[in-house]
Image (cartoon, rainbow, N blue to C red; front, side, top):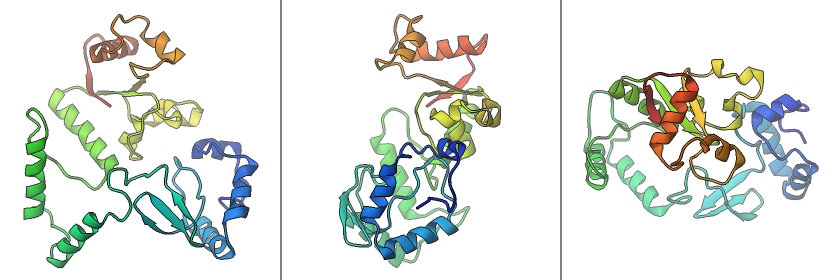
Length: 250
């Protein structure tokens, strides 16, 4: 069974970020996919364009609860990834009840240039529990949007324009969010992913801590390798800048 209706090229495998290209995947499909699941699976491959930084589809899910996911045939698995529900779990009853309550109150969406009581209460609560002078919030639909708005705000507040991020970091799939991510496709390994194709002035550096050779080599010129100041100054020196110009670090 192929994931896209045709044999994938090595380039496509690299772009997909898929690390399991062995026969084990086919064995998994043969062992776990029933006829009904295979039918849905093939329709998924036919009608969906799978995003380029995810592993191709493994199975067809029917329900999820807490830490468990369940396929069409009733097989239950512990979800060791939990992408998107790390802090609450699947079908958290408190979350479901809160959503139902708000829907029943007749305000499922707030139009532009208006405010509403639940969002004001949430912003107030965040201001009360966050440290220092972090007293205002700007809500958005998802993580990529949050990162991109943060970049714009950082540039506006600081007057600078560069960003510094860690290798192997992930900040989203929006254009600017992907540009400052440190995963391999955005580190400009193949020519088509060259840094000129991404948002300009996005620099990636190894994390200050960690026993890897590339990090040790990079930080060897800095006495205090845990210092954020050291990270910024090393990045500025390698980029050829004569004055600090980093607006944000991620």
